[in-house]
Amino acid sequence: MALRAVRALGATWAPLPALPALRRPRAAPLPPPLRARTLGPTALLILARKYTDKHEWISVENGIGTVGISNFAQEALGDVVYCSLPEVGTKLNKQDEFGALESVKAASELYSPLTGEVTEINIALADNPGLVNKSCYNDGWLIKMTVDSPSELDELMNEDAYEKYIKSIED
Amino acid sequence: MKNMVIRASLKNWFQLFYVHKFPAAGFKTTADGAIILQSVSNDIYQNLAVEDWIHDNINLENMQVLFLWRNLSTVVIGRHQNPWQECNLKMMRQKNIKLARRRSGGGTVYHDLGNINLTFFTSKKKYERMENLKLVVKALKCLRPQLDVHATDRCDLLLNRNFKISGSAAKLGRTAYHHCTLLCSADRFLLSSVLKSPYKGIKSNATPSVPASVKNLFEEDPTLTCQIVMDAIAAEYAIYHQIDHHVTLINPADETVFPGINNKTKELQTWEWIYGKTPKFSISTCFNMVYKHSFLEVKVDMDVKHGRIEVCNINLPEEWLPPALCGELEKNLIGSKFCPSETTALASALLRSCPQDYEVHRRWNLFCENMTTTLM
Image 1 (cartoon, chains in turn brown, purple):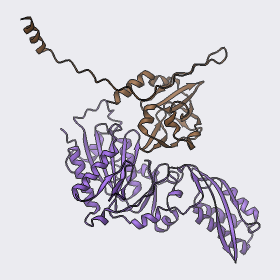
Image 2 (image 1 turned 60 degrees about the horizontal axis):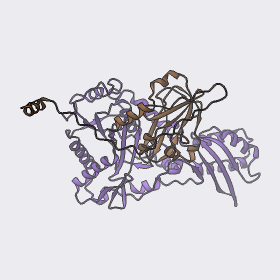
Image 3 (image 1 turned 135 degrees about the horizontal axis):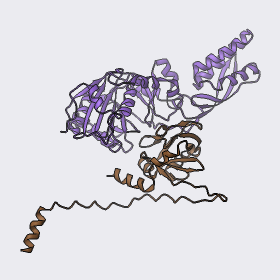
Image 4 (image 1 turned 120 degrees about the horizontal axis):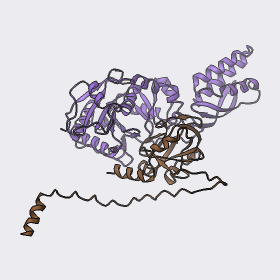
């Protein structure tokens, strides 16, 4: 009786949603942890890396942001064969196209994570565009720029949020 | 309801998919749809502008577009290429063959009315070049089952294993597009001559083309015309996306359907885009002139950035021309466009400031003509 009752109850329950399949752990290495540094008595903060939904990252130090593309982006892109970067002094608004990376798969636009002015470009990429693939968070940086509206940083994703974002689009 | 092709006018259809009016989150479509467009224009700049316009204005999250187009004689270089390295600009000027730079990557191609261009627009997530090419191969095999056509992992299409009939390029921006050529009945001999650069001594990190032997489908089967092939590809696309086999003709000059497109067309024709976007390069070369039984060697070193001369060194045989005049030329060339008409104009202007010496004028003209012909 009791069993029958349980079964009857079971019949009216909605089936439990299937558990999402366990995902294969990402082959990509975790980005290296940011170093903390102290400069004299006033420790100047390196703000943690922030990400855009277009897979650029920016890391701000002393008011200057270094911009690159994420590991997810460089994997998707394939071998980079050419980096088209803006001139130093170019003024960019957030989400402006500031250049392109050409790989064997496509020419891929680059979008500015923030509003600011380009202060430096990575000239090593002219002869060695593959640095973007080999070292996307370090030697493969693209440009450095001023941060004209620091509040724009709050609109970007932190490490965790970006990881979640990647998982959601991989579906 | 798979068939999303709206029977209303094209303008109304586009309005439903404008990026800015309908943020992806808020716009609900019942299902994925697709549409096939064919350009009535044979102008490369207008057709490239259509690609730009669709990329910038249409929300492709739930919609895909196939765009069919052909152009009159044109050489099209990739986004980061150097036209001086890729083609014979001199011959193109003589034969009135246009030069265009597209926004996608990849190498240099020659278009004429015997070549079909196909652009597959999708969301970035659905970007799949091989799928597109498989569709093209399937269409061709449906037409002519005996045809030996296959796609390589470089995203080329080969005929009879050896001959390239199609090359691909792509752009990933807000959305994605993959476009490819398809040689049906193009002028293969003109193609080979025009895609051979005569310019020597160029050092550049621009993306190079990979030369290949090409063939036309028409040479394999004379009944394969561009129209037949385009129809077959459209039919296959329609089957794949479960839509009507309906090809919508579009006029790329129509601002009511494509608001803002004429600005895009203009930008694609500017010198700054076509030549000025060339990655920085240097030239180190020499050429010979024959003058009155003398054999003279001239050495030229230049750096060109954004298509303009940044550094200029010209070494002429001593005293053959007044050194002050040559020095002035070197100085004046800096900042000027790396372009035969601009260089010739500058050189002529300098000569006018010179005393009327027939001999000097004659030598100067010979020198300038040789320099522009050899380098530009």
